[in-house]
Image (cartoon, rainbow, N blue to C red; front, side, top):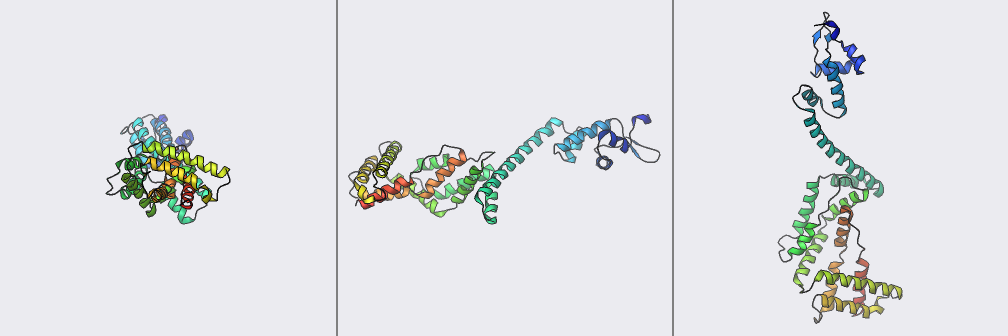
Length: 310
């Protein structure tokens, strides 16, 4: 073999910009095997060593491990195959980094304790399947053996929170809070009670549309009470509360029920449960849905006015 076509490690170092130590390491790992040896026993490399070193450096810069680099150089795996696998792996890493960034920004906003920060990190970095499982387990537990209101259960299951791959800090924070809320026993009880109450009070009309009309009417009455200076003197507004009570009675065909007042108050207590309302607010934040205005002050005012009007 022509001695002029062979290079020493020092010559390869000067041509490639890699250190002698790095080239020797690659050579020991079989990535750039020597072509021959000099009479003194020094390793010599052919022209293909330059190309192998350049490709090895590129692949290493892209994050490939040495074993994979060697497979590519030895044609045991194609560059396109290796690139596809590692691009997918990078997608996972990028998603994880984005979640960590969102958690860090949420931590900066909340200023939690060390224990709270650890919980935030563990909850936020769950994979999508684990997040779904957490919510599904909560709903399974809340609605176990409840068969009389499948529509309500289906609604809850259809609104699974989906944390995006690149969440904003408030979305990561909302997910952590929702995950914690799903561990709240009082919320599970309230959710189950809501489903049971609705199933026990069937209506022949479109209950959903009537609820919307009632909510609208309650808002109008609430605004009237504020404008008239009635709030917080709830007792003075009993007629308005009675009017709303009539709307509720019509909606659920209970207008002739002598115990309508007590039934209404029990139902309002369920509807205005702060855990339930907060759950839907958090789901909207996580999923990027438009936020709906809270009805809690309206329901609270109505219930109080109704009590004073007895």
